[in-house]
Amino acid sequence: MKTKVALVKGGYTGEAEVSFKSAAFVYSQIDKDKYDVYPITISLDSWFYEDEQGAKHEIDRQDFSLELAGNKVTFDVAFIIIHGVPGEDGRLQGYFDMIGLPYTSCTALTSALTMNKGYTKAIVQDIPELNVAKSVLLFKEHRPVSVDMVTEKLSLPIFVKPNAGGSSIGMSKVSEWSALKQALDNAYDAENTGYQVLVEEFVTGREFSQGIYRDAKGELQVLPATEVRTTREFFDYEAKYTPGLTEEITPADLNTEQKERADRLIKEIYIRLNCKGMVRIDFFIENNTDKFFFIEINTVPGQTAQSFIPQQVRASGRTETAFYGELIEAAMGE
Image 1 (cartoon, helix red, strand yellow):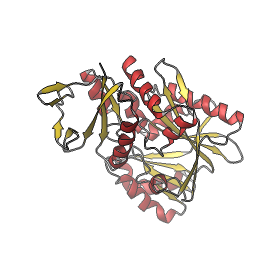
Image 2 (cartoon, rainbow, N blue to C red):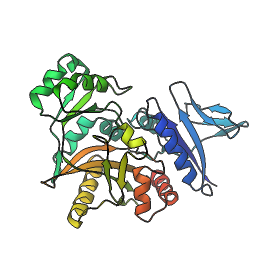
Image 3 (cartoon, rainbow, N blue to C red):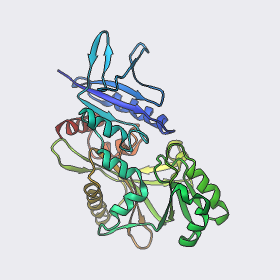
Image 4 (cartoon, rainbow, N blue to C red):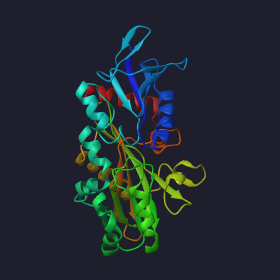
């Protein structure tokens, strides 16, 4: 009997568009001989399964089931592919915990913590050999005085971004103080990000993104790193999703010591944050000093054919089909 997989997509933010693309790719790659896969859309309006004829079937939120042709369908595991709220911030994970449905992502606590960039940095900053950029964390109550709080503590250039956002939505690089207020407004007002803003000093260096996951045997597997080179000022939403604006080199050109150090630190970050499933960690290697600077962690990374994780899976000699199967089996075996 095949394992029934709920492929959960959509969400409550602007990242839903990316989620649908990721889910379509994951669906195309999962082994249908082993798994019955049901794409489930979660939106503010409804939770539903859309069958091949285009008919929508509402999800019963009492137990995350649906009725098809008079039969009740329940799931063995949820493959979460929602970027942002509610699939990356712990809300959906907490719901699945309450109804006893295994899922492929980090736990509710880890998801909620890592969605908050400022809190995450506080947890990882004492890891040996790991550095974090000097920063200021702003809350809704700070908004009237946020410009002064930033100018008093940080030096230009700086990055301004929603503390709980993703896909670089609402993110700005500020090189002149005159542009700071507008950048703060953009970050505060980003949809469903909690009115918190993280402002960080700019680190000059090479930017990398690297995946790690726990396989079906419980072993940590670090994927090859990707180096990101963009023609934009920084890796913003347009650079991420507009073809031709960014060069992505997988595997990255790292020397032996840099590769071993990055792999070691990424494992320690995964362990320190008590991660599950696959995550992606972004970091800089600073020019001149060669120091490793943690940027952020993404607990539901993009999964289009061009996304970092699929690139890294292929570079490691694996297939996406085998990789997604491992994530499903690991989730069910915990």
